[in-house]
Length: 535
Image 1 (tube, rainbow, N blue to C red):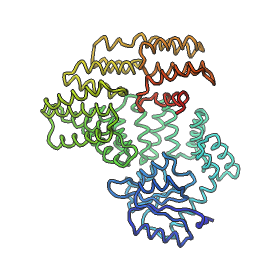
Image 2 (cartoon, rainbow, N blue to C red):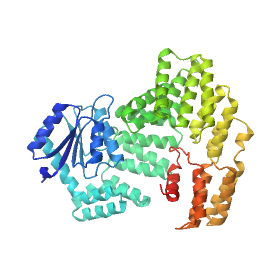
Image 3 (cartoon, rainbow, N blue to C red):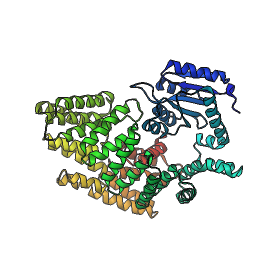
Image 4 (cartoon, rainbow, N blue to C red):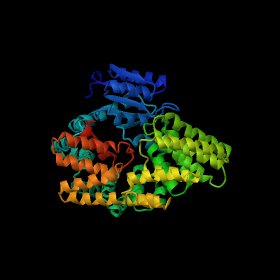
């Protein structure tokens, strides 16, 4: 039985009457510790300072403010909510889009207004009973210890077979976090054989995709979508697999269906925008990016890349036709936001100016476009961070279009210096230039790096390090070479590397400190950075 007098509650709703009435219900149940918040922003501040046992969170909290989904995202990512906390999403709406959006981040329950004291008490007490049973598992999750989660799952199952279903997802997540993939695959397939569930299909599909088994992953998702056609996450997974297989058109169609089902996900809209842009479906791209920009205003997933994507889509949609007044206003507003909110990001400042210059050129104002291009080039010369590959190629193409070939070559050289060990990157660069000073800039360093990797894998660490050093001397800003050098040094240095080794590691990592967070090697860089610098 829930001891209401010993529990703390938080009510989050923008309507005073609802907060007052719900608080009265809780008081009648014996709750003494009840706090209220009229916005998601206020709720987040309160949760940062105090841990609550139960949170009643309204989904809609007013235009221009965080919604309930975004509040839950922030609470989870910032670890301001315990797994033992009961989080109930509340809304007056019952449309499919709202319900699916509300439950995508998996609150403990979904409650429709209006409700009475009895209904509220029944829901809270049922959830409390479940959480009490799962307490050892939830505490292990709070400590981020997957091995303990597995042990707690086993302990709960021993109490009775009827409790086993409660552990399934926790066990699967723990196996994944422990990289026990073979065991995880067998476990998921066993669940599907007895009781198919959307999350099991999603987990199995993601596992097979991660292991490069895309044909099998596609089969899993196809089965899943037949059984659960209204689960947007399954469409996301299937789309990712199709992109890996090169079927970007069908992937876009699937994401469009996911967006139709659950339109309030910033990341899903952003992914759709990028895919549609790649498919040269500029109308769909501009629509998706526009949603991502608007919905992202109050989200932690707000991303300037969505602004730039929207502008690119709008310009591409109107290529050859100039830009009407309405489109010019939207472009100016969208780019101004990037420049205003990212004053210290040199790369974004350059890209925003180049986008603006390109739009002015398209709108028939070459003089102002030329001035902005010169400003962008001046900033470009002072940049100490890396462009992502796509950003570098876009900026280079824009500079070429503005007649700034020398500046474009400079951007392409920098791109090759950082990413030229990737054949796909070189293929893209080759579409923009045939300049041998660009295309051959990294050939020797790449060869040395590959030899170093083979030596490292063969256990010849000293030889590998010498090869990496030579390669890094030729291309000190190549991300892969710098990371390989640091890793080899640390491996040779052992548990207590000598100061000279640590200094060389620091130098190698500092040379690529501008690596974009979007780069798939960023996590590796961060791990090495923490080991070398301590933070």
